[in-house]
Amino acid sequence: MLETNLSQQTHLLELIASALHVKPSKADHTNILPVQQQPQSAPKSNQAEKSRKSISKSSTPAVKPPSDEPPLHIKSRTAAYPDSSIQRFVVPDDMVPWNVSFPDYKPPHYTAPSVAIQPSWADPHVEGSNAMIAFPFNEYDKKRNVDRKSYMGNYDVVSGLPRNPRGRTGLTGRGLLGRYGPNHAADPIVTRWERDEHGNVIIIRGKPVLEFVAICRKDTGEWAIPGGMVDPGEYVTETLKREFTEEVLIDIDDAERTETSFLIQKLFNSGVEVYKGYSDDHRNTDVAWIETRAFNFHDNDGSAFGKVMLHPGEETTGVQWRRIDQSTKLFASHFQFLEAVAKKHNAHF
Image 1 (cartoon, helix red, strand yellow):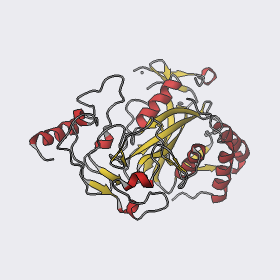
Image 2 (cartoon, helix red, strand yellow; image 1 turned 180 degrees about the vertical axis):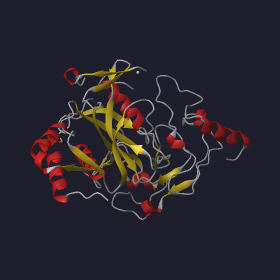
Image 3 (cartoon, one colour; image 1 turned 90 degrees about the vertical axis):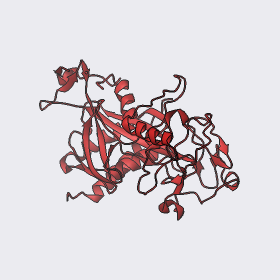
Image 4 (cartoon, one colour; image 1 turned 120 degrees about the vertical axis):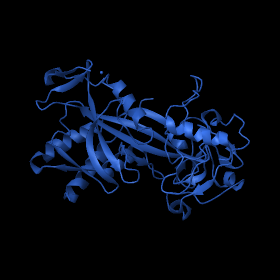
C-alpha cells in the first residue's frame, strides 16, 4: 500500500483551506494542439410489474415532462435501495409528479439503522404532525445549525413531513440520509486539459478534451466526483476543501513542495459554481433528498497538479484523472455536472 506523508498532507490541507474563497456564479478525428496554443478557460398489479420491466430496459423516461418542468428523476427510483434488502414501490414515469393521482401508491418505509441510532449528523426520528413542530422546514434551523431551505424554492410539507419536490421515489422514511427534507452536499470538480506524451492538448472534433479528478466510491463501486455532505454550521467552501482532501490524498515531492503548494493554493482560489440544485441520487426518498452545489477548479496549464501524485483516501478505493465525454458513467447526477463544465470551457463532450 502506498505510504503518504501525514504532515505534508496536513500542510497542504491548511493551504487549500486558506485559499478556498470560492466565487459563486449565480467530437471522430483526433488532432493535437501545441501547448503554446492551448485554449483559454472560458407492486401489486400486473400493470405495476410491466412498469418495473419498462423502467429496467431504459434509463430514459418513457413520458417526458413539459419543457418548462425539471426532468424526471431516474436513479432516485432505482428498485433496490442501497445497503439494504428494501425494494421500492414501482413508480411509472407518468405517476412521478405528486399532482397526478396514484391511489394505489403505498411505498415501504425505511430508515437505515445507521441513521436510526441518531448520530450527530442525523435528525431525531419524528413522524406525523410532530415533525412540523420539531423542525422548521423551509427555514434555517438555528437550534441544529442546519439549513432546511431548498435551492429550488419552498417545498410542500404534507402531514408534518417534507415532500420531495421532484416527485415520488417509491420509498418513504429517510433511508441512508440524515435529514428530513434537503440534505445539502458540495462537489469540487478539479479539471485540466488532457495531453499527449509530448504535452500537447488533445483535440476531438475541433474541441479540446478535459480530464477531471475522479474517485471510486467504496459503497457503490462507481466512479464519482469527490464530494460529500455539508456539516452543521459549515460553509460550502469549507465542505469543498474538506471533502477533496479526505477523498484524494496529494503527495508532493519535497523539491517541488513550495512551488506546487503555491500553484494549488492559487487554483483553489479560482472556483466557479457550475451547478446548484437537486441531485438524482439512489439514496433519495419521498421525505429526504440530496441537493448540491458543484464548483469547478480548472488547472488550465496543468502546472498545479502536473507534479503531484494522487492516492485514494479512506472513503475511496481508487483515484485517477478521467476523460470528460458522453461515455463517462458516474454516480448520481455527476454526469450532468461534468456536462456543464465542458460547456463552460467549450470543450469536447
